Image (tube, rainbow, N blue to C red; front, side):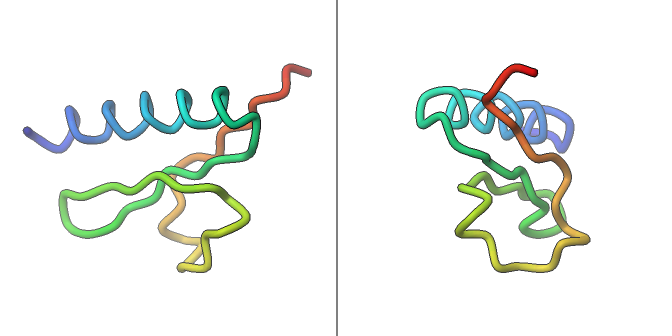
Length: 59
């Protein structure tokens, strides 16, 4: 899987997790070509590595 495919998959999983759990979720860089997805409240890594935060609540 190339970098753009991995990033697209992370964004898709992030949105799915946010809307399923109805909680804020972040997508972050976890390595050179790796990305992670987790609840924003549990993320304690470097904020510069956060690529996106999903807000499941419509405005």
